[in-house]
Length: 280
Image 1 (cartoon, one colour):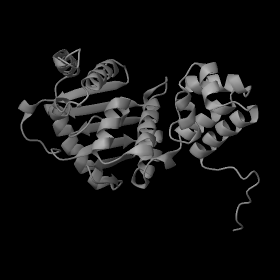
Image 2 (image 1 turned 90 degrees about the horizontal axis):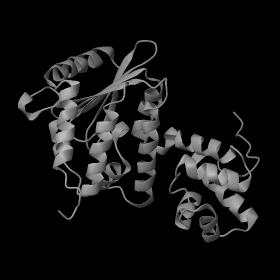
Image 3 (image 1 turned 180 degrees about the horizontal axis):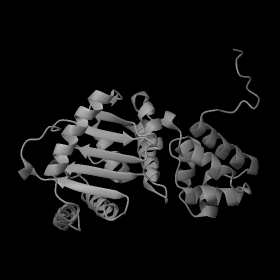
């Protein structure tokens, strides 16, 4: 097959293309980063990070840039492509991410950390830092994780159920302010109609998934796949017999977990235990 001919010379990688367009538009106008920050009301360093591909920022910032440059919808469209690009995730997650986007319902069990779909930026950053990420790679992975949360938005969002081990909720962040924000976010999300959050208390005793975070994705045609994960690797499981065995263990854990109302009360009680002032 003949190699694809490059016409514009611009990057075909969505995140980098977005950064290139931002840098090109500003250069054409002859505007400095500081001037851009002053005119739009955001710190100029944010625009510098966007032009380097270190962050995608938010839709609100991108819409303001579209208006400023007179490119209605163009930058926002490029931002959406960059935010939805599965290549921003590590290789072992890419097949899973593609299936996750197709799922009509998701079931999850958390033995170590909260599911990425319910994490705040502060929580994700501290957890990923503990895993050894830093610098540009850290910021890219935080952005990517936050982009995943859009999966639960909208009228056609899939149903999502997570069972969270009490150990997860007892492992607070070092940053008290960020931990409070995470618990508040978790409590708010637990009220959404398409989201169910169960807590598995310590009093439940031993259970079959005591060392494994696991996801189940039910796809549109009825097939279910599983994804297991620990601190060092993740495995996509598509074999029907293996998935069914894992589902049996998950069902047993669900029987041990607290009902939805009691689970939310546990989260709220833990929230009350967090000092409002980090110096307390």
